[in-house]
Length: 294
Image (cartoon, rainbow, N blue to C red):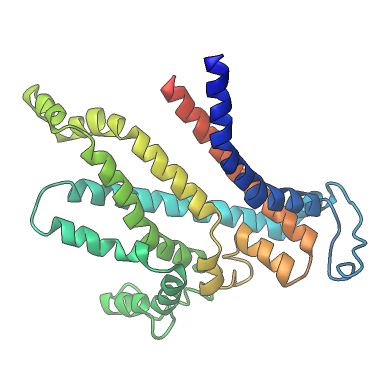
């Protein structure tokens, strides 16, 4: 009887969260899913006579070379950003975990890039990678690495690199912050014991730091993947997805289909592809966490 009452009490406490999830997240998601199975466009928007087309929108998307390019861009942007953000963030976290003068203030200054609004960062990135007035071209010219300015944001071969670089500038402080908190949870006595046993710096890092940092590493990679994979504002402000879709990702492409080309169902289908990719990653992470807890 007490167990049943306890369960009922748990359901009551969970009810507000469940209602919030259904109303705020569930309804738009289901509506978007239904929309992706229809043929809603600018011609039948007013009449509301959109017919069901089943999986036709998805078939059209996956056979479209532009969508394939955008899907590839999304993964390159996400993985490229994660590799640099995590590697540099981890190095900085290890560096600032050492106790030295001004470590705290310098670490705080690095966080400014993360706290800055994305729109401001995107405008800064646009100026930094500008052709004539850009800081990057100016530095590379003075150092002799290039003989003439590079058209970073107007060339299909360099635009995505520039966007990834700006995104790394935002993400490195976040990675550093999370990984630093993980490092502080490792007791110093573990390192001291290993040092007494003769372990060198690399052995202490590989056999102590990495295993004990595993939860923090998984969390930062997972959050970083989700945050980066659904990016929209950075490339939309810096390049509008151009040139020739070279910086378009799923988020910007869904927006273009829905609100520029008015192919609402195609935009909804693109949004569902984005959602499904993140859902798979999320379920994989939950399974990984559950396995570790068992």
